[in-house]
Length: 366
Ligand code: KQY
Image (cartoon, rainbow, N blue to C red; front, side, top):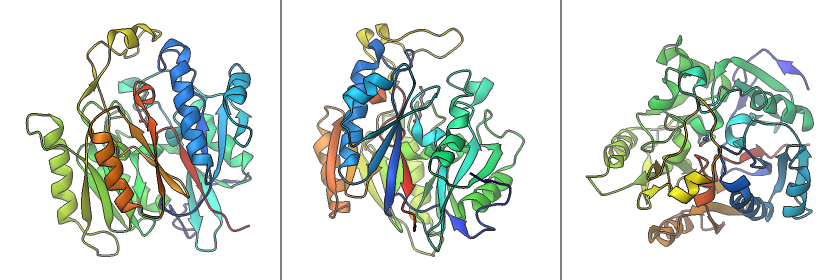
């Protein structure tokens, strides 16, 4: 693996859209006791279901610690590759490299600095040193060159690219105090352009209410094709989420993308608020000085947190009347792909969902 100190844009690389073809997908096996209740058994089952759904149409690599290697190997079918790697938790979207691609199909990784969503300001755990090595290790594993962007804090869940020069982010996340407090918005925008090969950054203001990542974009809004997005939506004006979704809607409907297209916004309804139950809280380990889930706490549930594999859209279900409605909307938007739903409450309890636990490797020309 060559460590590169140039920038992807200068070298002719850009971030492809998730709906473009993949060579595979990376995931990380859950085991952290303060993230996953009761030894993480329900989360492991859900992660395995996600892996199997994705592996129907692309290769899946599951990273697992030495302690969990045998369990992961036993719970996953043999066509899913299990690779031993140490991590601090299971958020492949945020700790795996962001992959960029050139016009002739070469793929490279970007290694951002990861500080557990806000470091010592408002991060979610400490330390994060194992997570911070995952991007480089995966570039090595895949024999990909890797851009060194460790002077900049960023997670994969905080960016969405249309693959045609437009990238979406939220201000709540990218301008948060725990990430790059010494950079101006303009400097951050330039960094995104330099590393993601983007021509235009669309700044949404907010994300999903109480999303502990400081409101990652991947939980509120996602590209479904160039010029078209799905936006997590509620019509309930008494729900604090209403103002957040409405402000995104207003921005998006007045925006054009990098190619000058007006953006088409498809509203994807939210499930009813999903809250922690006492029994679930009781199953979580406590870590001193770290945020802990409390009974009644509202979780950041959203159907937008889906993964687009080569042959499917793998989406969360929450045992809610909106499950079928959301699946119907995604089915209409992705007629060529199977819609596969996974009961996802046990992933949500960890603080994210299916998009957050996956990272696609774009198709390479070999
Ligand atoms: O949503 C994500 N991308 C990660 C969520 C991390 C939550 C940690 N408890």
